[in-house]
Amino acid sequence: METIQNNWVKTLVHQEEQMEKTGKISTTNPFVPSKVDLQEHTVEFLKQLRTAFTQHISFFNQLKGYMGSIRIYGITGTTADFMLFRNGYKMIFSMKEAGWISIRFSNMDAALPGQEEQNRPSDYLKGAWGAFGELKWTHQGKDIRMDYLIRYYMTHFVKQSLR
Image (cartoon, rainbow, N blue to C red; front, top):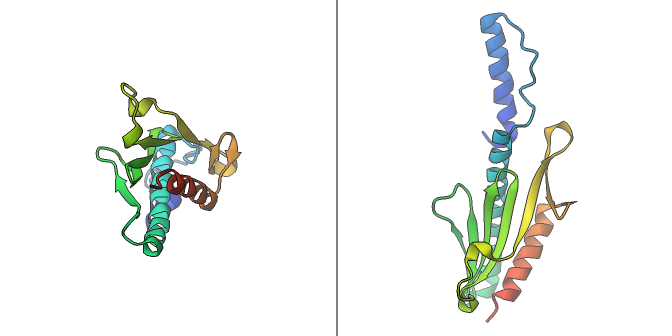
C-alpha cells in the first residue's frame, strides 16, 4: 500500500513522533513541494504510463496476433524510462529532469546519417505544482488526462510503425 500518493501520511506520522519525543512543536510545513518530490512524482508518473501502455498493448497484441505485435521495454540505466517498439520504429518515454518527460520517435530504418537520436524532435510533458500540492501534468500548457494521452500516442505509434 506504500505509494508516493500516501508518503505524506508517513511524513505526518514522523513529524508527530518527533514532536512527541522532543516536546517541541514544529511550525514548518513539511508538505511544501520540493525538487525531490518532483523527481519522485515524475518517476511515479512514468511508471503509471508504462503500466497503462502495457495493458493497452497487451489487448492490442491479443487482437492483432504475433505478426505486427508491439513490444514494450524498460531502458537500462534509467529509473523508469521505457520504449514501445515495432517494425524498427520506437517511441521513447524518458525523464529529462524532474518535472519533464520527453516523448521521442525514432525510425531505425530511416535514420539520417550523423543525426543522433537525442537530437530528434520530441514532445514534452511538464509537471507543475497546482493547488494543495497537487502535481498537474501538461502538454503545451494544457492539462492532460492519462487515458487520452495513451490513446493519442498509441494511435500515432501504430500508424507510424505499420509495414
